[in-house]
Length: 115
Length: 384
Image 1 (spheres, each protein chain N blue to C red):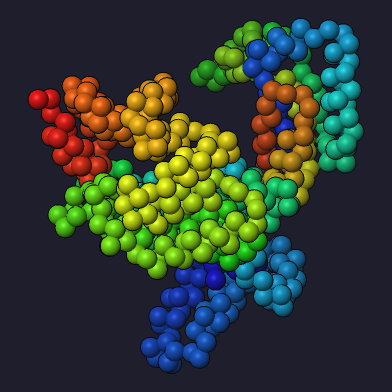
Image 2 (cartoon, each protein chain N blue to C red; image 1 turned 90 degrees about the horizontal axis):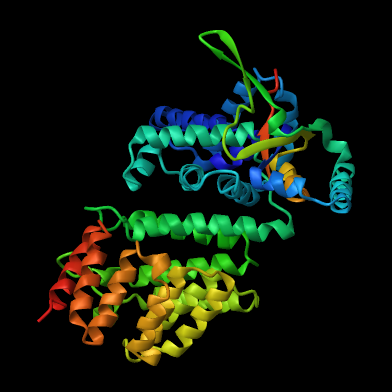
């Protein structure tokens, strides 16, 4: 089964992350790096995203594209990154997600497979 | 049979359709040709053949066919059942979906029967089932027995689902429907099934014991006019001793595993009541100890409420009222909190406050039987 993990968090999570000292940040990246290395065989493409203040949204109203500053998801939640994951089933994906050291929340979405 | 087919083919709808088809075939052919020697085997064969015919059009056919050959040799009907129950109660599904799927796929309820049991429109239940099955398939929820360290958490979800179904049957909270006996007995049957499938797990035994203890006292909860009767006023001679003995046997068997859990403790508390000759002859001190253990394992304000009521018998009404009032922030919207307060206030001679608490309790429930009981208590607390 193919999934995408969406690494989500609240504005408070983001603020806590931004407040990390350089040493703490390094340690955090080491923990996260270890997680990625440990699950290497099951991971596809993925990226950490720049903050929501850098986002631009194009929406379509009556078929006409409207460009707007800011992320599509409004409010306190934000998506901070994503990675493709390939596991046998949801339980395996859940076990991976439960071992994520980065805090926040992970939304697990199965990918549409063209048959 | 459906469980085995789902396991073999990994597809709820396919399995259900094929079992339905087999039943239709039976209705058509048995009256004509006579009932086969082994009707269940006949149905399984027909349903399996039908499923294979349908899979023939599927490109996964060859893999599945190999699986089926292996499965048939193993004949692992029991594991199939367990996998099915665990999948239906997967934590990635909503509680509503878990309940509906379990009743449909494990207990064999029809959509209409589930709708009737939960007083919901049939279309709502049908849609809930469709969505749940779609999620099972699309999200890759496996039919797999979890690892040893995961099993405890997964099993806890299964037991919570079964207890919810039991309670829905034992005391429906909707007006006009005091009790669905059937749903409670189905839940007990499912709990017994889980006990058989996982004979070394103590918590399913605890849950089954708890259900049996409720059922043993089920008849005496209502008088001839269908009015609810308080524990203190129940005719204990009407309690079903053989069910109580079975429950106590289960509790003892579970205890030998030395892995206490919330359901075992709840059952032990219920057993204290079931074994007591009267309210005064009840071992309240033991009950308080059991509630303390329960609060450590699974803290909840409801458990605190029940402990406070037990404290009333051990340490008097003043202590009980103090313990109860400490829970007000959590339980102000719960009718039994106010009902309990009313009883304790009344025992302390504070009739005006008792009356007010009773009115609060009454305003917070729509169950017919509970309302009638609260109304009769209200009358007894009327200020002089």
